[in-house]
Length: 206
Image (tube, rainbow, N blue to C red; front, top):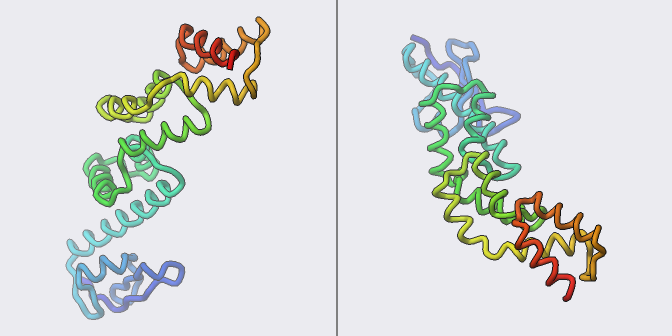
């Protein structure tokens, strides 16, 4: 058994509370957790309660780090699982609890990630549906979500025209070597030779 002797609001993070047991610092908790457990000075805690609170503190610490990880750009569940392992959270149950919490708050959604990823690629680095699908699968997006987003991608010829304009600027008749080079480049991005040939020909004549 131990008695809470002090509850001190954190200086660096005012949303955290430093908890002292028998006049010795024990751990920190969020203000929400302090309120939820009705923690106050003079309250006596059992060893089991202390262990549970320590585990809550560790979970909150990891949760805050994951939120920071997600703040830079959207992530997939697979990416979050890999990051949790780096934070030494390898237990599948603990991982799932954190992932479920993130999903319930709207911070984690593979379908939303896939839509964002495709929009970003199309805006800055257009790719074929096939190549985008491979990239998304490698990031852990399910085939079910993949079917949804690829159905909305539309005509690949638009992406090819974007790349042609980006690489060659305004439409013009290409020399044989130039046409071969740009066609090979587009093919490496996953577009079919037949579609590349057709779009390049139409682009030249615009």
